[in-house]
Image (cartoon, rainbow, N blue to C red; front, side, top):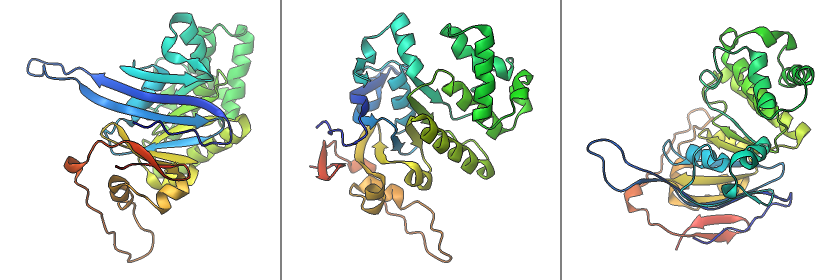
Length: 301
C-alpha cells in the first residue's frame, strides 16, 4: 500500500505504518488461518489534532487503537511516537512511553474498578509511575477532579455512586493524570445517555484546547465525527478505504463504502427521505490508497 504523506501543519506526533494484527482462530473446530483484524493500516496524527477513525462494528477500529498503545500486540508494522519506535520498547522503557499515551474506554461502568474509591482510581497511574509524594499525588487528584467538572470532595466515593456521565469524567481524569499528549478515545460517549453525550464531548474539546491534547477519536456517530474531527479515516474489514480532511470527506466522499456509510446518517429536515446507498462488500477489491485531492486518499486503482 502506498504510504500517505503527513499533511498536518501542526507537527508530527504519531506515525502508524503498515500496521497488521492477526488473531488465531481457537476452539475444537476452528483451526484454520488466522483472522486479520487490522490489515496494512497507515496514518499519522499531529500535535493537537483530532483524527477520527470510523467504520462499522468489527471493522478493526478499536483493535487499531489498542495496538497503538500495545494493549494488544501488533503482528507487524511500525508505530512511532515522538520519534520513538514503540514496538522496540519493553519493560520500563515501554511503561515510561505510556505516560504520554493514554486511553478513554467506551464503557464507564466496566472500566473503573468497583472496589476502589475514586481518589485511588485516579491516583493509581501516579503511584504506578512513582510520581511525587503521597501528599502531592492526592493534591493532583483534587486538581483533576476539578478539571473534569467533579467535586473534589467525592474522592472517598465508589464508582457505583456516580452516574454514567460522571463515571466517564472519572475515566477522563485518570487518563489525564500523567499529562499525556495523545489520548485514544474509544467510543467515549456511545454508552452514555444522549442527554449527557454533548456535555462529555464539550469537556473533551475544552481539555484539548487547554492542554494541547491530540485525540485518536474512534466512533460510529458520523455526525459527531464531522463536528469535532480535523481529519477522518474510514475502515472496512480491517483496511483503510478513504482518508481526508473531515469537511472534504463528508462533502465529497469518493469510495463506494464511504458513500454507503454516510448515506445512513439521519436527515434533520422534516419529511426528507433517507435514501440508503447499497454497498456490496463481497465485490470490494484490495486496492492501495491513492491521493485524489489535497490530503484526500482513496483505495482506488
